[in-house]
Image 1 (cartoon, rainbow, N blue to C red):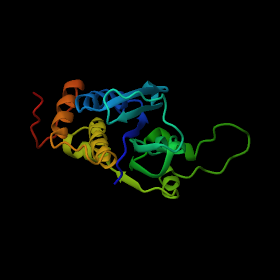
Image 2 (tube, rainbow, N blue to C red):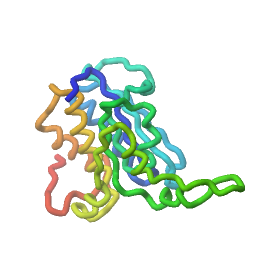
Image 3 (cartoon, rainbow, N blue to C red):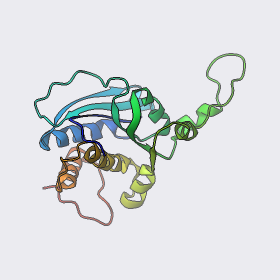
Image 4 (cartoon, one colour):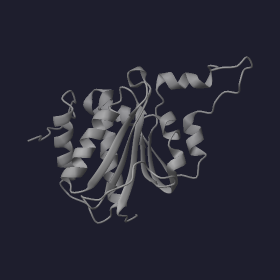
Length: 209
């Protein structure tokens, strides 16, 4: 475990995975939990499965002023709902970065290892992102967000909910003395209030009051 005063977090994925919605929920969660929080949402071609990621700088002090952008080698938590997107942010990581990555590659990206982008000569196939990540000196925690969402909620679009829960888990490892037993209740309340189309678990009732 670490115990820092500032935590740098990135949640990455592609358009349609609910990165934007999750970021808004987490920003509200951090604020109501007493943290200082600055965040930015970066969108590529979001509606056409382009890259989307949310960048957070979180402080134990609510009124802390943090510089824009996460400095090189200072990313504390990376949560990726798509393996290719995890690779985009590794230049910011360090040896103790907490990395959570979806095991499943989205169909658009699986074609990258067989399609030629430019040039007349055929290039060697790209390694799968899972292989590239496994070769790095990082501890990758592989998560089946999509599969879990389908099994427990009946819809893969709830994958961002389970990614959000991993955010809570990871934050407790960075801010060791700031754990709150009611944090999941607060997160659930904000998530289902913010995301109207979200489907609760098939086997549970959620209190959003």
